[in-house]
Length: 111
Image (cartoon, rainbow, N blue to C red; front, side, top):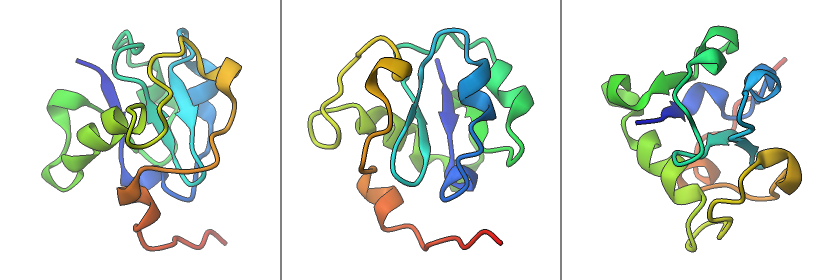
């Protein structure tokens, strides 16, 4: 089981998790970050640095965030980004789109 980034990351994308991930499995979309479920080694380092508390172990997702397990997984599939398993986010860079759930999420204005 992997870690999952939930809704508190949308429109925030602090990025501290990206910097500390030892396997480079956190990818950047337009409005949020995504953890690749097959590349994540479940070390939990990302959880400890996330200022918005947006990262959960897949088995511990709060009910209101449960859909984000599928969102993170589907982001890498053919129907969304078609990234597959590239083996590292730094090689891919920022992807200019998001999963449809994130696209339809109300815009959060950060002041």
